[in-house]
Length: 432
Ligand code: 4AD
Ligand code: MG
Image (cartoon, rainbow, N blue to C red; front, top):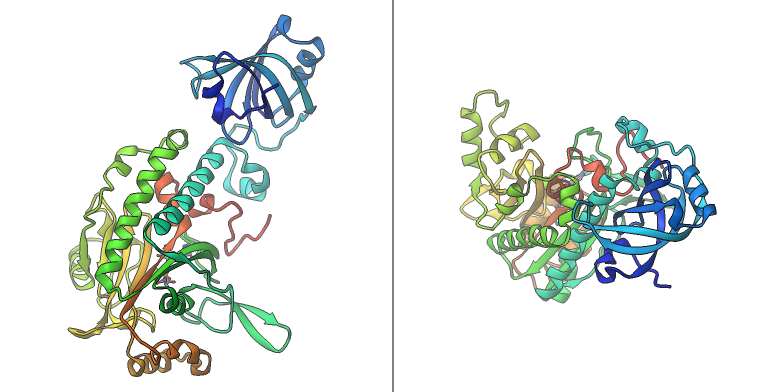
């Protein structure tokens, strides 16, 4: 008996195989059952004729509702009309557990109902497609960096201080002796590992106690953070662009059925070819100030509506560079041609997704850096190790952070980043 998966049916045409999975949907007509079976790798229609299968199996299937677990044995038939291109002509099998009232039916449910049942909602076809795209994005990222000679060196999650400002830190009691925080970004540690390994990346969960209830914000999200010694802003902008092009290509190649399930408009993804447009903060401000309906205030950071206006002008993601120092983090390098600005970039994705990458060249001058730490009222004692990096072989270096859920959400074409995380954490939700 050959046990296989739905994903691999193409290797078993006209052979008898066994699938192990769950009932996704069933329709029955007298002497016939149609079972849409899912096994985690895909979905396939299984046909049971009363005369072809043991009586016991036929009866059991008649009572098997959505999510009943089962094992079916049958012949793999090519069927061009069937989704996936195959159908199973069932000969034998067993229902492991009959389920009759599964809470999530194919009808429409509200987001709160579904989020409260996330442990089950993961089984539905749309969530399956999104999270398989997430998997392909992660694999693509790791392959790309490995091929480019980067070393993965992860940063700690528990940290004694802030990286991206103190306002949105999650505090943890560290054995009653001192406070620790869940990391907002692995960057500062990645700067240390870049000086040890040259080209590095860290990739892990990061945390922001942000009181924002938007389609772009989670309180726990995964961030990819490459950091490169001897690289300037231009170098990491090119890196970010090459990476995004590569991710989109890999997902289109490896996850075509999932993109189809999501009815993703592929023309939007086919446009992502590189040569991303670039505008400076000053140029972008000028556009916004002249744009009817924009509420942008000169000198401020861009809000979500501002980013949408700017990205709508382009087919591809757009880089915005050289923001004012006052709206950015302490570690960013001053622009030598205009010290009120910093050498930084944000990459804004099309279709209203907003910022998917944020990065910069890092300040390598210890005096300017210490000044910035004071100005941002960060505890100098905790940054001694960080300023050491500027004492012992300081070099120009740059890096960025890519928000995994935002990239997955954009590629999958979903409205809210919460569906791009297996168990999303938001201001108003920590369960299940
Ligand atoms: O722009 P951010 O805050 O940059 C940093 O943390 C840098 N230290 C990264 C670096 O240079 N190594 O965050 C980087 C990216 C954003 O562009 C966005 O994609 C994502 O992380 N991000 C979030 N994603 C989901 N929910 C949130 N609350 C997010 N905040 C940031
Ligand atoms: Mg940012």
